[in-house]
Amino acid sequence: DAKTTQPNSMESNEEEPVHLPCNHSTISGTDYIHWYRQLPSQGPEYVIHGLTSNVNNRMASLAIAEDRKSSTLILHRATLRDAAVYYCILRDDNQGGKLIFGQGTELSVKP
Amino acid sequence: KAGVTQTPRYLIKTRGQQVTLSCSPISGHRSVSWYQQTPGQGLQFLFEYFSETQRNKGNFPGRFSGRQFSNSRSEMNVSTLELGDSALYLCASSLLAGGISYEQYFGPGTRLTVT
Image (cartoon, rainbow over all chains, first blue to last red; front, top):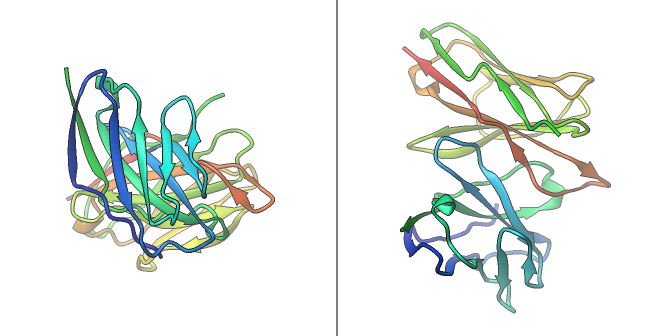
C-alpha cells in the first residue's frame, strides 16, 4: 500500500486559510488522493478526492502537484469547527472500500 | 437520508467473552467496511463486505469475523476477547457503481471496553 507523510500537527487562526500538506512520493498511476477528517468524538468524514487535476467542493480545495508526488488540502477560511485530525489517503479504486489511514495532521484553530 | 447507525454505542465486556456489533448502512449503500481505532495503532481496516461477500480483509486474527445480510446490514463478532481489543469500532458504508467507489460514510462507532 502506498504511503503518505503528513505533519503531526498544525495551527491556524480562525477565518484564515489553511494549507495542509501531504507527501506521497510512491504514488502509482491508478491511486486517487483522498482526504478525510475526524472531528473529536466522531467517525471520520469525507472531505475531497482527486486524481490529477485540482478539485474544489463546498468544504475545501485539493491542489495536486504536477508529478502527483504531493498534494495540499486547502481550507479557505478556517472555523473552530474545522479543528480535527486530517488524513491524506491513497486509494486504488480496485481496493473497494479499504482505506489505509496514517497518523494524520491534527489541526487546531485559534479564535 | 439517515446516516450510518451503529449499535450499541458503548459496551463493556470481560476477557474471554465474545461480542457482536451491528451496523446499518445508509439506505441504498451496498458496501460496509469495519475499522478499529486505538490510541496506539490509529485507524486500522478490519474487513469489507459487499453483497453479502467479504471483499477485503485486514491483518487481524481470526477471532475477528463479520457478515453482511441481504439488506446490507452488517455485524462483526469478536470472540475470546482480550484487553487489547478495547477500542472504538467504526463502520463505514459506500455506494459502489461499476466498481468505482467514492466516499465512505462513517458511523459514530461503538466504544468497546474489555476488562
